[in-house]
Image 1 (cartoon, rainbow, N blue to C red):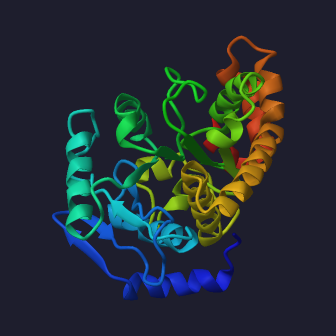
Image 2: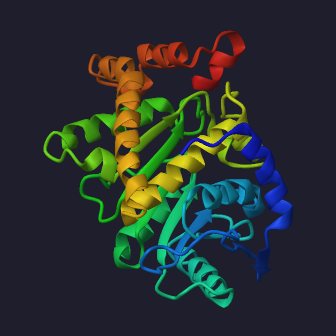
Length: 312
């Protein structure tokens, strides 16, 4: 499931030609024409929850790419959270309820398989919500964030896909290395964990890789300059999201099988990339503040001079 550069150009055309519907404030993106129903006729939806301070329409291209890459019909909703400020367990369920009602009003079945995809800071409250109502969801997709420490991937009640840029300055790779250490320990007793809840480090990508525009200034100042074009990273991310949905739903089966192989490879890559940091963590008690841990991330990122201060 490799997406060519020419298809990226075509997707920009799709943004203007494929129908979307904004009911209230959320944006509903209807399935692409020509896509067939799943073998069981079940509708599938991904609801994208933006990073704090990012307008929901900045995720339009990401949503379209996932729709293009997923073999069957896929509904996408972009949640408008900009007026809410901080998402909480009080307002998030209300917003998701509005989104689901709007999806249903445009033709999606009420019993659809629903995945939540969340970018950045709202990831923790979204994980809390998903953990509380797992029977209403099929999976959780974390973009530039990861499960809070109070949860573990092996015990979480839903499959989780974690996608983090190697140069994400908002979510540091040191934190990712710590999380991977826990996954490695759990993987020994649960070999299927790395394909059930895969971890993907996006090469050369930073925190704003999932959006069309820019991050708010307070986040932009923390982020690290990307080394790979944003559309290339977004293609990889949307490909992983589409394969994750197929893997969870086990259809199409051939795509689900390929996804298993891909996620085993991405886990191995993530382990290899973060090995120097994990080794240094074991050498210091105050591991996340260690000079040597910071030096390791600078070395891994390739940042030099004034840019290296973004990792401090």
